[in-house]
Length: 517
Ligand SMILES: Nc1ncnc2c1ncn2[C@@H]1O[C@H](COP(=O)(O)OP(=O)(O)O)[C@@H](O)[C@H]1O
Ligand SMILES: [Mg+2]
Image (cartoon, rainbow, N blue to C red; front, side):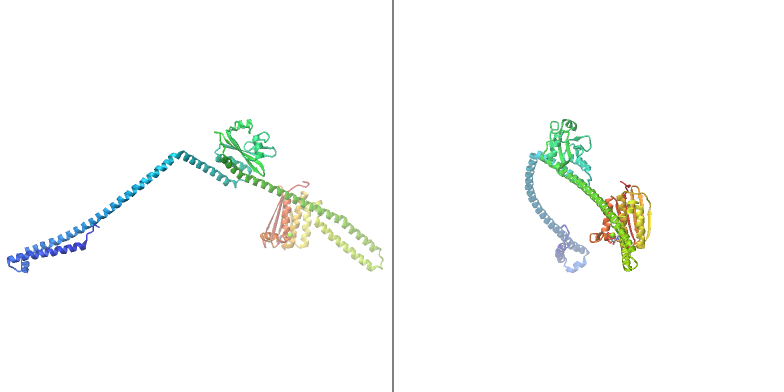
């Protein structure tokens, strides 16, 4: 658009040139007829005529170019005007459509604004409700998030004191925890406030019904005693029970002090929802107490088992010593007598008697070993330190192992501790004999504060503790678990460190009780 059309201008220039030439021929022809010179002569003779020639040919040619350009420009302009006219028509059309739409929108807007005007109050209430919902939800989310990290019932009650006023738009919350000793609910932050079921009707009712109680007018409601009503300084209150194992273990008392409050079902639902989450922690606390109780019970049983085992061993060894060994000694004495009574001629009979005597001797030796294994009498008479010394000595001799015994204490300990430590040492040494292939064994015994520490080390083949734990559920491995039980019965610990090729170290630590404790 608006560009100079070279091709069309060229055509116009050519037409102009032809017209100029025709004019020139006409003029020169006319002039030559007047002067009677030939046409070519005329042209070649006169220089003015050359100028005339130029003018007559040049001007039409130039005019042709200009006219061509002007015509092409005019055509372009005409086309543009036509296009603009079309666009204007379109715009007029669009404007009409827009007007219709605008009218429709205006109608709608009128309708909507009518709705807003008519329902303004309702909308404001809805907005407030939404904000309340958001606050309640965020309070509930906070409760849900914190509940997992709460360890004890004290933490839970504190959480309730913060969360309940936020979720119920109240001013404060007091919590009370049941005390079995006092038979009353004791104020968490004010232990002097005691709500007894007999003197506070609300407490009596909440313990029976285990449901929230709402009190719209604290000042007049008889559910709370007059003295308490005065001291609370509240207009309305709601009491929510925290129930665990069918018993109300705590109460949250939510207070409205600035204005009295009409309680809705929703208020009660929200309060109960929050408290029921707290109940989980109460339940866990009870479960934890149960676990502790069963652990203590287990420990008591293990102690009783260990001590009755020892009693039984002691009784059997005494019976063997006082009964069987005495009888066998009596038999030796009789055999001796019989042998002397036999004459020289009864050589064979004498041999038999001598053999019998030997057998009975061996039996007595074996029996003494059994008696020692059952319960070394030295343990009762002299105590742990010399018993271990004697035991290690015979262990080293029997198994060709060098012993390094290093007791750093002399005093006697409670019988259960001495027996327990001796049995633990016995089991450890049995394992060394059975599995370790050790050359040296050391045993350290010392007192550290209120504990006795016994460390037994060997330089044997060692073992992989994890492997043994895996195997323990199968057939063998009762020795190590038995050691664990025995240590538990003494409220102590046992630590076994071992690696293949690096020997084994068994460390036993038990609380030290003096003899007679
Ligand atoms: N001092 C030790 N040296 C090497 N291995 C040991 C030692 N003490 C225990 N073990 C390994 O631990 C396993 C478990 O021991 P234990 O519970 O006493 O069962 P048991 O002696 O009846 O095999 C043993 O089978 C042995 O492989
Ligand atoms: Mg063993």
